[in-house]
Image (cartoon, rainbow, N blue to C red; front, side, top):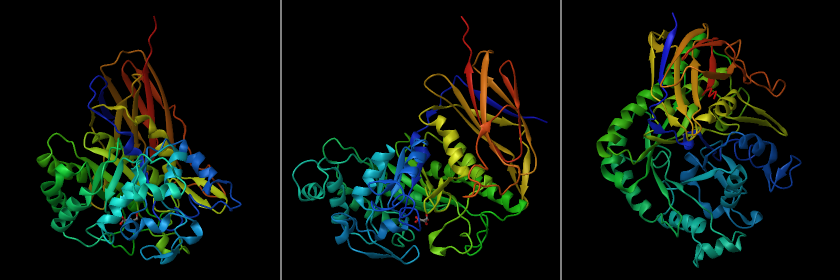
Length: 500
Ligand code: AHR
């Protein structure tokens, strides 16, 4: 029996912030070094040290915001070590990620240059765990102050005259763990103190983000909202999709059973429960929904690829990752009123990446293609959607739905619907019932799918999984009947035909 998706196209519920389609790049493994940064002297084509192929590919995604420098790295990063002549920059040990030497060649100027090249907004995460209040205050002064001051002068001596524009600033990361192992009461007080000195200079408006909860730590959200809500613009949340039950056995990125597929889908869907529950706590202290829930780390986390450095978190990316991306982005779209931003971890060569590199070679992952297909939702109005007659699937005794979806309407009146079939073995017949629209519809679609559940792109076969035109549908008045194959992400574009 067909599952039914009812969409009210004339009821606009909330703006889907483009920042939901944000990214995260940490000094971890080969994300910054080799991924983005190869240095000016590299034989790999680059502009001022940044890979041209990577910039070209990422620009196509319209990346709205990029979080940096971590992650756990942020709370042991001292920004002053990463400015000035490169040969004089202090070297340090990256204790969290593989114990490798960090030469600080990629620092503040290089990151801001990268953001300019990508035409993306920077989101900088400051150091609360091991850094001083003054250090954080001076970073913001260095970045954003245009007048006469010690930091502004130093920036000018380092080659940048004009202050940069910086909106998003995180006051610490995972302060319940790698960012200081704090209790929420203690961090809430530290947040209040540190953010006081994160100043707005001139017309640079800051959006301050407090370090939020791990997964289902609702107490953390309760305490932070109770103690500091008026002093923050956003509160973060981290949740990774990890199929294994123990940290040492998360599961392989490419070699997994049908059961592991199902568990992965169910765990990805858990994001909806998390947001709903954290949201209801936030609603209590902030009924106007002024404070954004910032999901600034999410994505799949599997065992590293055999033979690679365990501290580098390098994993392949299959059609399963594409489904996790599609499902999660649908969840964010559907919570657009409260979710102001999300940042997938991480952009290149780490966890659920968009891009994998091998020296001069680069491939796009299935996750990249989902971000590409879904960019139509950026800054569009979220439409209400109701799914009926849902087929339920089984993951180790727990039920989860076969399909999930979100819909939006852009400024031109075009409706986009993104649908995921999470079933690895069976197709899904779906009837999309469009309300508030005339009968003369023009429908087109794109699909990302595969024939086996671990299909992926490799350096030998870089275009194995890529979007295709989707034609398995028919229109009947305002009803669109679709046949989705197993493990598929589909985006439909719907316009009303106006014939005069
Ligand atoms: O993304 C990898 C790590 O996961 C980040 O550094 C940390 O914040 C989280 O635990």
